Length: 482
Image 1 (cartoon, rainbow, N blue to C red):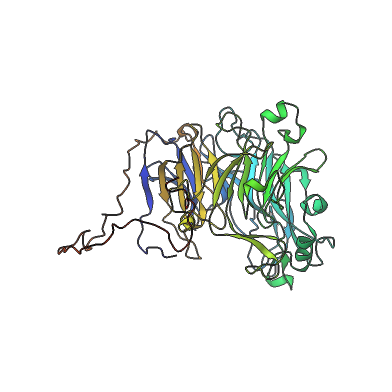
Image 2: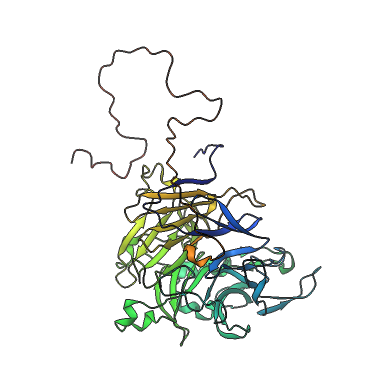
């Protein structure tokens, strides 16, 4: 599928009457963590800070990391997790999960943090009325890495996704390792066979044959207060942890007290209860919408598509590794009790022809979705650095394209967050100026000719031209004239 080599960056559309105004934070390539207003103005930069993800807390504090382990020795291991004030001063740090001695480097304590973290006071790390994260104390939930061996899963070394909770002083209060709950994950025999042979092996210099990034959990958050627990369903205890595993197509809730998995969606989506959803593939940022926001209690997830999962071989996956494949993304809001799809954003809702143009909403990795107080949803279509906001009726009301590229020559954005202006008291509320959508059918770059022909002749026709069947069936085929 072709893409233009010329496209705008920065804010490209903004409807102040329908969008939820605030500041948006994201990782700007290798530049650092940047904060922008609704017109795309960069109002603050924490240069050099690594956001995986970057989060803004009340008072203008930002959380991220100050360094990452050499990829020859580990995948996505951040040295620490730090809370930084407006002036760049570190006011809190956690880096004591594991002491590591990599060849050629001084021995160093690591947090091995990756992909997610939460601070006590707010279950998911984004704004919700009455659920402000603590900034001067409190516990922190951290997604970290731990190297393990488990012959029940594979005879290869495994990279496990530890979920830990630490206090303000850095003491580990709680730890959960998914490899210890393998039987609860629901892999069938075919998936187990594939996992044993190749647990998504990633190669690093000192590990010989590499290490199996078998689950690749990319989000972990508290369930938070919700209607299901208030009605007596203990699975949705606010202190329980909801997480998702990109490589296994699994979303699950872990009970904090027992450590058992008490709710799960995937890896098998063929059951009568889940079949209508279709397979969720390579998903990111699965979480429960916090209390006080429209859709509270529902599961919100960016269903990437792409390639993930373990199972029977097929033409696209001859060995059964990454056997589920789809070339477009979805954002799904699901009632976790009934598994009903309450709301969704797909290529169809975006107004594209399906399936021919489904790829136009597609990020095969990273990405996120945040529910906003007015019912809108902020979506990070991460692989191409596109952040945008849509209404419940799927109207696009804000769009921004990151102009920052990384060492891989991509402008990818792992995740973005919108926070209210009052969370950043260092700045005055900016003036909000509408950005009208460009009519791309007539817009031209300087020097290009305008639309339309200088010379026109008419040709006698036999029948009027009516758009009909394309080379592939579209989603609305057969509905015309019915």
